[in-house]
Image 1: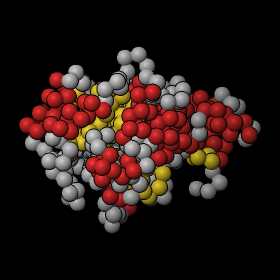
Image 2: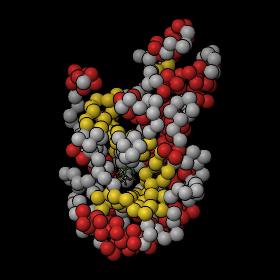
Image 3: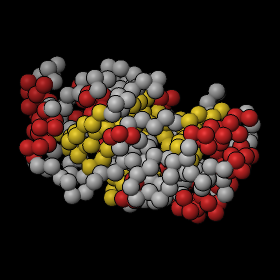
Image 4: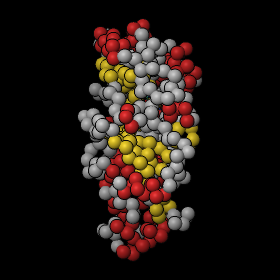
Length: 359
Ligand code: SAH
Ligand code: SF4
Protein backbone atom coordinates (compact mmCIF):
# COMPACT_ATOMS: atom_id res chain seq x y z
CA UNK A 1 0.00 0.00 0.00
CA UNK A 2 1.40 3.38 -0.94
CA UNK A 3 2.03 5.83 1.86
CA UNK A 4 0.42 8.72 -0.02
CA UNK A 5 -3.03 7.20 0.33
CA UNK A 6 -5.25 9.48 2.38
CA UNK A 7 -6.69 7.80 5.48
CA UNK A 8 -10.45 8.35 5.40
CA UNK A 9 -10.82 7.07 8.98
CA UNK A 10 -9.56 10.46 10.17
CA UNK A 11 -12.11 12.57 8.30
CA UNK A 12 -15.42 14.12 9.28
CA UNK A 13 -18.04 14.38 6.54
CA UNK A 14 -17.14 17.95 5.41
CA UNK A 15 -13.45 16.98 5.23
CA UNK A 16 -14.32 13.85 3.28
CA UNK A 17 -16.46 15.86 0.86
CA UNK A 18 -13.57 18.27 0.31
CA UNK A 19 -11.10 15.40 -0.21
CA UNK A 20 -13.37 13.84 -2.83
CA UNK A 21 -13.91 17.15 -4.58
CA UNK A 22 -10.17 17.86 -4.76
CA UNK A 23 -9.79 14.56 -6.58
CA UNK A 24 -12.57 15.35 -9.04
CA UNK A 25 -15.18 13.07 -7.40
CA UNK A 26 -18.72 14.01 -6.39
CA UNK A 27 -19.17 15.26 -2.84
CA UNK A 28 -22.26 13.15 -2.19
CA UNK A 29 -20.14 10.00 -2.19
CA UNK A 30 -18.92 11.08 1.26
CA UNK A 31 -22.24 10.05 2.77
CA UNK A 32 -22.19 6.73 0.96
CA UNK A 33 -18.68 6.07 2.17
CA UNK A 34 -19.63 6.88 5.77
CA UNK A 35 -22.55 4.46 5.57
CA UNK A 36 -20.29 1.65 4.37
CA UNK A 37 -17.52 2.34 6.84
CA UNK A 38 -19.63 2.90 9.97
CA UNK A 39 -23.04 1.29 9.46
CA UNK A 40 -21.90 -1.76 7.55
CA UNK A 41 -18.36 -2.13 8.84
CA UNK A 42 -16.91 -2.41 5.33
CA UNK A 43 -13.63 -0.65 4.60
CA UNK A 44 -12.68 -2.41 1.36
CA UNK A 45 -13.79 -0.07 -1.44
CA UNK A 46 -14.20 -2.99 -3.85
CA UNK A 47 -17.05 -4.29 -1.69
CA UNK A 48 -18.98 -1.00 -1.77
CA UNK A 49 -21.43 -2.20 -4.37
CA UNK A 50 -23.46 0.97 -4.85
CA UNK A 51 -20.39 2.79 -6.17
CA UNK A 52 -19.44 2.50 -9.82
CA UNK A 53 -16.61 0.15 -10.75
CA UNK A 54 -14.60 3.10 -11.96
CA UNK A 55 -15.03 5.01 -8.69
CA UNK A 56 -14.14 1.93 -6.61
CA UNK A 57 -10.90 1.57 -8.55
CA UNK A 58 -10.02 5.23 -8.02
CA UNK A 59 -10.86 5.10 -4.32
CA UNK A 60 -8.71 1.99 -3.88
CA UNK A 61 -5.79 3.76 -5.51
CA UNK A 62 -6.07 6.99 -3.57
CA UNK A 63 -7.55 6.21 -0.17
CA UNK A 64 -7.47 3.77 2.69
CA UNK A 65 -9.49 3.36 5.89
CA UNK A 66 -7.04 2.49 8.65
CA UNK A 67 -8.78 0.23 11.15
CA UNK A 68 -7.41 -1.15 14.42
CA UNK A 69 -6.94 -4.92 14.19
CA UNK A 70 -8.24 -7.20 16.94
CA UNK A 71 -5.36 -9.42 17.99
CA UNK A 72 -7.16 -11.03 20.92
CA UNK A 73 -10.68 -11.39 22.21
CA UNK A 74 -11.25 -12.71 25.74
CA UNK A 75 -14.64 -13.47 27.23
CA UNK A 76 -15.48 -13.20 30.90
CA UNK A 77 -17.92 -15.54 32.63
CA UNK A 78 -20.16 -12.48 33.08
CA UNK A 79 -20.35 -11.82 29.30
CA UNK A 80 -17.85 -8.94 29.25
CA UNK A 81 -15.44 -9.12 26.33
CA UNK A 82 -12.03 -7.54 26.16
CA UNK A 83 -10.26 -6.97 22.86
CA UNK A 84 -6.65 -6.07 22.38
CA UNK A 85 -6.41 -3.90 19.29
CA UNK A 86 -3.28 -3.25 17.30
CA UNK A 87 -2.83 0.11 15.59
CA UNK A 88 -0.97 0.92 12.37
CA UNK A 89 2.29 1.52 14.26
CA UNK A 90 1.81 -1.81 16.11
CA UNK A 91 1.05 -0.07 19.41
CA UNK A 92 -1.70 -1.82 21.30
CA UNK A 93 -4.74 -0.67 23.24
CA UNK A 94 -7.52 -2.46 25.05
CA UNK A 95 -11.25 -1.96 24.67
CA UNK A 96 -14.11 -3.60 26.50
CA UNK A 97 -17.67 -4.60 25.60
CA UNK A 98 -19.99 -4.73 28.60
CA UNK A 99 -23.38 -6.19 27.73
CA UNK A 100 -26.66 -5.36 29.45
CA UNK A 101 -25.75 -2.77 32.05
CA UNK A 102 -28.73 -2.43 31.10
CA UNK A 103 -27.54 -0.86 27.83
CA UNK A 104 -24.84 -2.35 25.68
CA UNK A 105 -21.71 -0.41 26.46
CA UNK A 106 -18.40 0.03 24.71
CA UNK A 107 -15.55 1.18 26.91
CA UNK A 108 -12.91 2.76 24.70
CA UNK A 109 -9.47 4.33 25.05
CA UNK A 110 -8.21 7.81 24.17
CA UNK A 111 -4.46 7.33 24.62
CA UNK A 112 -1.86 4.58 24.59
CA UNK A 113 -1.00 4.63 28.29
CA UNK A 114 -1.66 7.72 30.39
CA UNK A 115 0.44 10.55 31.77
CA UNK A 116 -1.62 11.18 34.92
CA UNK A 117 0.01 8.50 37.06
CA UNK A 118 -2.85 7.67 39.46
CA UNK A 119 -1.42 5.33 42.07
CA UNK A 120 -4.10 2.63 41.80
CA UNK A 121 -4.32 2.39 38.00
CA UNK A 122 -2.29 0.03 35.84
CA UNK A 123 -2.64 2.24 32.77
CA UNK A 124 -1.09 5.05 34.81
CA UNK A 125 1.90 2.84 35.52
CA UNK A 126 2.63 2.66 31.77
CA UNK A 127 3.07 6.42 31.43
CA UNK A 128 1.94 8.10 28.23
CA UNK A 129 3.11 6.41 25.05
CA UNK A 130 1.10 8.56 22.64
CA UNK A 131 -2.24 10.14 21.95
CA UNK A 132 -4.70 8.25 19.80
CA UNK A 133 -5.89 9.98 16.64
CA UNK A 134 -9.58 10.76 16.15
CA UNK A 135 -9.76 7.93 13.61
CA UNK A 136 -8.23 5.48 16.08
CA UNK A 137 -10.71 6.50 18.79
CA UNK A 138 -13.75 6.22 16.50
CA UNK A 139 -12.17 3.10 14.93
CA UNK A 140 -12.41 1.26 18.25
CA UNK A 141 -16.17 1.69 18.10
CA UNK A 142 -16.27 0.42 14.51
CA UNK A 143 -14.33 -2.67 15.49
CA UNK A 144 -16.37 -3.33 18.64
CA UNK A 145 -19.70 -2.82 16.86
CA UNK A 146 -18.72 -5.24 14.09
CA UNK A 147 -17.25 -7.85 16.43
CA UNK A 148 -20.27 -7.87 18.75
CA UNK A 149 -22.96 -7.77 16.03
CA UNK A 150 -24.03 -4.27 17.13
CA UNK A 151 -23.57 -2.33 13.85
CA UNK A 152 -27.31 -1.75 13.60
CA UNK A 153 -28.04 -1.38 17.29
CA UNK A 154 -27.93 1.37 19.84
CA UNK A 155 -25.07 1.33 22.25
CA UNK A 156 -23.48 3.52 24.89
CA UNK A 157 -19.89 4.65 24.83
CA UNK A 158 -17.82 5.34 27.92
CA UNK A 159 -14.42 7.00 27.58
CA UNK A 160 -13.11 5.02 30.50
CA UNK A 161 -10.52 2.80 28.89
CA UNK A 162 -6.87 3.74 28.71
CA UNK A 163 -5.92 7.39 28.86
CA UNK A 164 -7.19 10.76 29.99
CA UNK A 165 -9.62 12.12 27.37
CA UNK A 166 -9.14 15.80 28.29
CA UNK A 167 -5.39 15.35 27.82
CA UNK A 168 -6.17 14.47 24.19
CA UNK A 169 -8.99 16.94 23.82
CA UNK A 170 -9.15 17.75 20.11
CA UNK A 171 -8.87 14.18 18.87
CA UNK A 172 -11.43 12.96 21.40
CA UNK A 173 -13.97 15.59 20.43
CA UNK A 174 -13.39 15.03 16.73
CA UNK A 175 -14.00 11.30 17.24
CA UNK A 176 -17.27 12.07 19.03
CA UNK A 177 -18.38 14.26 16.13
CA UNK A 178 -17.56 11.45 13.68
CA UNK A 179 -19.51 8.94 15.77
CA UNK A 180 -22.42 11.38 16.01
CA UNK A 181 -22.79 11.75 12.24
CA UNK A 182 -26.24 10.76 11.03
CA UNK A 183 -24.55 9.03 8.09
CA UNK A 184 -22.59 6.82 10.47
CA UNK A 185 -23.57 5.54 13.90
CA UNK A 186 -25.63 8.62 14.94
CA UNK A 187 -24.50 8.21 18.52
CA UNK A 188 -26.29 10.82 20.58
CA UNK A 189 -24.04 12.68 23.06
CA UNK A 190 -26.48 11.55 25.77
CA UNK A 191 -25.18 8.03 25.17
CA UNK A 192 -21.57 9.02 25.68
CA UNK A 193 -19.86 9.48 29.05
CA UNK A 194 -16.49 11.16 29.29
CA UNK A 195 -14.56 10.31 32.45
CA UNK A 196 -11.78 12.65 33.54
CA UNK A 197 -9.47 13.34 36.45
CA UNK A 198 -10.56 16.97 36.14
CA UNK A 199 -8.20 18.99 33.98
CA UNK A 200 -9.79 22.39 34.56
CA UNK A 201 -9.06 24.12 31.21
CA UNK A 202 -10.38 20.99 29.47
CA UNK A 203 -13.55 21.06 31.57
CA UNK A 204 -14.02 24.71 30.68
CA UNK A 205 -13.71 23.94 26.97
CA UNK A 206 -16.06 21.00 27.35
CA UNK A 207 -18.66 23.30 28.92
CA UNK A 208 -18.81 25.19 25.60
CA UNK A 209 -19.03 22.13 23.31
CA UNK A 210 -22.10 21.89 21.10
CA UNK A 211 -21.98 18.08 21.34
CA UNK A 212 -21.59 17.65 25.05
CA UNK A 213 -21.23 14.14 26.45
CA UNK A 214 -22.22 13.19 30.01
CA UNK A 215 -19.50 14.07 32.44
CA UNK A 216 -17.92 11.80 35.03
CA UNK A 217 -15.23 13.26 37.28
CA UNK A 218 -12.80 10.94 39.04
CA UNK A 219 -12.54 12.40 42.54
CA UNK A 220 -11.20 9.56 44.74
CA UNK A 221 -10.29 11.73 47.73
CA UNK A 222 -11.73 14.53 49.84
CA UNK A 223 -8.62 16.47 50.86
CA UNK A 224 -6.03 17.99 48.56
CA UNK A 225 -3.27 16.29 50.49
CA UNK A 226 -4.65 12.82 49.87
CA UNK A 227 -5.87 13.52 46.37
CA UNK A 228 -2.48 14.82 45.26
CA UNK A 229 -0.97 11.59 46.49
CA UNK A 230 -3.49 9.39 44.67
CA UNK A 231 -4.16 11.57 41.61
CA UNK A 232 -1.00 13.65 40.93
CA UNK A 233 -2.62 16.22 38.56
CA UNK A 234 -4.45 17.46 41.65
CA UNK A 235 -1.33 19.49 42.40
CA UNK A 236 -2.13 21.69 39.41
CA UNK A 237 -5.93 21.47 39.56
CA UNK A 238 -6.94 21.15 43.20
CA UNK A 239 -10.31 20.00 44.50
CA UNK A 240 -11.82 23.45 45.06
CA UNK A 241 -11.08 24.51 41.47
CA UNK A 242 -12.49 21.31 39.98
CA UNK A 243 -15.62 21.48 42.10
CA UNK A 244 -16.14 25.16 41.33
CA UNK A 245 -15.90 24.38 37.61
CA UNK A 246 -18.40 21.55 38.10
CA UNK A 247 -20.75 23.84 39.98
CA UNK A 248 -20.81 26.17 36.97
CA UNK A 249 -20.95 23.37 34.40
CA UNK A 250 -23.97 23.75 32.11
CA UNK A 251 -26.14 20.70 32.56
CA UNK A 252 -29.19 19.70 30.63
CA UNK A 253 -32.45 19.29 32.49
CA UNK A 254 -32.41 16.23 34.71
CA UNK A 255 -28.75 15.53 34.02
CA UNK A 256 -26.11 15.38 36.71
CA UNK A 257 -22.36 15.06 36.99
CA UNK A 258 -21.18 11.65 38.10
CA UNK A 259 -18.37 11.65 40.63
CA UNK A 260 -16.34 8.47 40.58
CA UNK A 261 -14.66 7.41 43.76
CA UNK A 262 -12.36 4.40 43.86
CA UNK A 263 -12.50 2.90 47.35
CA UNK A 264 -9.10 1.86 48.71
CA UNK A 265 -9.22 -0.19 51.87
CA UNK A 266 -8.27 1.86 54.93
CA UNK A 267 -7.09 4.79 52.79
CA UNK A 268 -10.04 6.87 51.55
CA UNK A 269 -13.01 4.77 52.68
CA UNK A 270 -13.61 5.93 56.27
CA UNK A 271 -16.94 7.38 57.49
CA UNK A 272 -15.15 10.73 57.83
CA UNK A 273 -14.22 10.58 54.11
CA UNK A 274 -17.84 9.84 53.21
CA UNK A 275 -19.12 12.77 55.28
CA UNK A 276 -16.52 15.10 53.77
CA UNK A 277 -17.45 13.92 50.27
CA UNK A 278 -21.10 14.72 50.91
CA UNK A 279 -20.13 18.22 52.08
CA UNK A 280 -17.90 18.84 49.05
CA UNK A 281 -20.69 17.93 46.65
CA UNK A 282 -23.32 20.13 48.21
CA UNK A 283 -24.75 22.53 45.64
CA UNK A 284 -23.67 20.42 42.67
CA UNK A 285 -26.20 18.37 40.72
CA UNK A 286 -24.35 15.15 41.26
CA UNK A 287 -24.42 11.43 41.76
CA UNK A 288 -21.66 9.29 43.14
CA UNK A 289 -20.37 6.09 41.63
CA UNK A 290 -18.31 4.12 44.11
CA UNK A 291 -15.74 1.80 42.57
CA UNK A 292 -14.26 -0.74 44.97
CA UNK A 293 -10.66 -1.09 43.84
CA UNK A 294 -9.89 -3.76 41.28
CA UNK A 295 -6.62 -4.97 42.67
CA UNK A 296 -3.72 -5.95 40.44
CA UNK A 297 -0.11 -6.92 40.90
CA UNK A 298 1.98 -3.79 41.36
CA UNK A 299 -0.92 -1.76 42.78
CA UNK A 300 -0.12 -0.99 46.44
CA UNK A 301 -3.75 -0.89 47.66
CA UNK A 302 -6.44 -3.37 48.70
CA UNK A 303 -10.11 -3.66 47.88
CA UNK A 304 -12.30 -2.87 50.92
CA UNK A 305 -14.79 -5.40 52.26
CA UNK A 306 -18.42 -5.21 51.11
CA UNK A 307 -19.34 -3.99 54.60
CA UNK A 308 -17.02 -1.01 54.35
CA UNK A 309 -18.33 -0.21 50.87
CA UNK A 310 -21.94 -0.42 52.10
CA UNK A 311 -21.24 1.79 55.09
CA UNK A 312 -19.63 4.44 52.87
CA UNK A 313 -22.59 4.29 50.46
CA UNK A 314 -25.09 4.51 53.31
CA UNK A 315 -23.53 7.69 54.72
CA UNK A 316 -23.92 9.36 51.31
CA UNK A 317 -27.46 8.05 50.84
CA UNK A 318 -28.41 9.38 54.30
CA UNK A 319 -27.35 12.80 53.05
CA UNK A 320 -29.63 12.47 50.00
CA UNK A 321 -26.87 11.80 47.53
CA UNK A 322 -27.67 9.33 44.77
CA UNK A 323 -25.06 6.65 45.05
CA UNK A 324 -24.31 3.48 43.11
CA UNK A 325 -21.61 0.89 43.53
CA UNK A 326 -19.97 -0.15 40.30
CA UNK A 327 -20.04 -3.86 39.80
CA UNK A 328 -16.71 -4.91 38.53
CA UNK A 329 -17.17 -6.71 35.27
CA UNK A 330 -14.69 -8.92 33.55
CA UNK A 331 -12.21 -9.21 36.39
CA UNK A 332 -11.35 -12.77 35.35
CA UNK A 333 -10.04 -11.45 32.04
CA UNK A 334 -8.45 -8.32 33.54
CA UNK A 335 -10.98 -6.11 31.78
CA UNK A 336 -12.19 -4.22 34.86
CA UNK A 337 -11.54 -0.52 35.45
CA UNK A 338 -7.91 0.23 35.98
CA UNK A 339 -6.78 -3.18 34.80
CA UNK A 340 -6.14 -2.17 31.24
CA UNK A 341 -2.54 -2.41 30.27
CA UNK A 342 -0.88 -3.96 27.33
CA UNK A 343 1.82 -6.32 28.41
CA UNK A 344 5.06 -5.74 26.60
CA UNK A 345 7.34 -8.39 25.19
CA UNK A 346 4.60 -10.83 24.30
CA UNK A 347 4.15 -9.95 20.68
CA UNK A 348 2.43 -12.78 18.94
CA UNK A 349 3.67 -14.18 15.66
CA UNK A 350 1.71 -13.43 12.50
CA UNK A 351 0.42 -17.02 12.51
CA UNK A 352 -0.80 -16.76 16.10
CA UNK A 353 -2.53 -13.47 15.29
CA UNK A 354 -4.28 -15.01 12.30
CA UNK A 355 -5.42 -17.91 14.46
CA UNK A 356 -6.89 -15.47 16.97
CA UNK A 357 -8.67 -13.49 14.31
CA UNK A 358 -10.13 -16.55 12.68
CA UNK A 359 -11.04 -18.18 15.96
N1 SAH B 1 -8.57 8.79 32.80
C1 SAH B 1 -9.96 8.87 33.03
C2 SAH B 1 -10.72 7.76 32.36
C3 SAH B 1 -10.12 6.38 32.38
S1 SAH B 1 -10.05 5.61 33.95
C4 SAH B 1 -10.25 8.92 34.52
O1 SAH B 1 -9.35 8.63 35.31
O2 SAH B 1 -11.37 9.26 34.87
C5 SAH B 1 -11.75 5.19 34.25
C6 SAH B 1 -12.10 4.98 35.72
O3 SAH B 1 -11.45 3.80 36.22
C7 SAH B 1 -11.65 6.13 36.59
O4 SAH B 1 -12.65 6.56 37.47
C8 SAH B 1 -10.52 5.49 37.35
O5 SAH B 1 -10.28 6.12 38.56
C9 SAH B 1 -10.97 4.08 37.52
N2 SAH B 1 -9.89 3.17 37.93
C10 SAH B 1 -8.59 3.27 37.63
N3 SAH B 1 -7.90 2.24 38.21
C11 SAH B 1 -8.79 1.50 38.90
C12 SAH B 1 -8.71 0.31 39.68
N4 SAH B 1 -7.55 -0.32 39.86
N5 SAH B 1 -9.83 -0.17 40.23
C13 SAH B 1 -11.02 0.46 40.02
N6 SAH B 1 -11.16 1.55 39.28
C14 SAH B 1 -10.06 2.09 38.72
FE1 SF4 C 1 -4.94 7.88 33.70
FE2 SF4 C 1 -7.50 7.59 34.49
FE3 SF4 C 1 -5.62 5.72 35.07
FE4 SF4 C 1 -5.54 8.09 36.27
S1 SF4 C 1 -7.17 6.55 36.45
S2 SF4 C 1 -3.79 7.00 35.39
S3 SF4 C 1 -6.22 9.43 34.66
S4 SF4 C 1 -6.36 6.28 33.05
